[in-house]
Length: 272
Image (cartoon, rainbow, N blue to C red; front, side):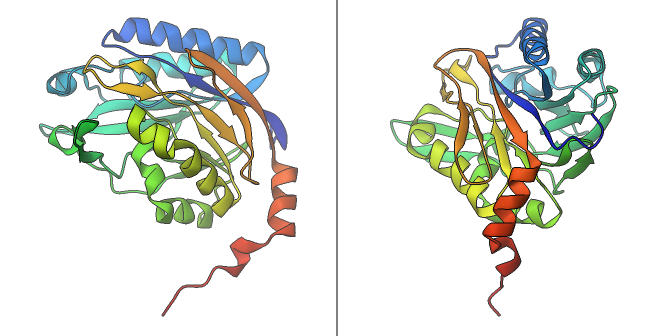
């Protein structure tokens, strides 16, 4: 797996609930399915570990490293793949929690941890009202991680609406960007695909975007439609309307050709 130029990546679409054991069992089953198909990178959705009532988030939070990341690291080691643990609610020493995405290498070690920067505070009458900032704290660091399968940039869900973050990831060398998500149905139906494809096109990266599906314990319905998009903006895998795993080839030589033939990243200018 050293310096892989071409390999399979997987995005896992789940409907997680408040039982961590059941969620972990499901995630492990999908990861094992992906590994049997030959995947070297598996990405789980946002809040895959625990999804419940907001008032219970602090109780459900863990340390990172902690008991769940220990189990996930063992999973990555056993399956010999890179694993992005979509997001885990992480204690931060206050009444609020971080929404943290964790990257494991094929030896089971934590090689990167990203705390979601942008909190989803919206009020769309008769559609969706959420204030993540009531229970969650934002991170403060843009995260990329060099690995044997390429430089991975890490984002989570609502981050997708902030193109400047993705440009910073690309400037830091990102070739693959992960977007574990729990997009609500109204915003997903309106904007999910166009945002995922736009971020891939703008930055000429592979975007791996696993989403939650179904109704969450707090009553919100998630959009699903997990996707993997190539550096030309082409969806190369898309999930059906159910819990599932999707796979697509990551071809870094193809990515280099896209960047060479349409060298927009070398044409970036900033207004004075």
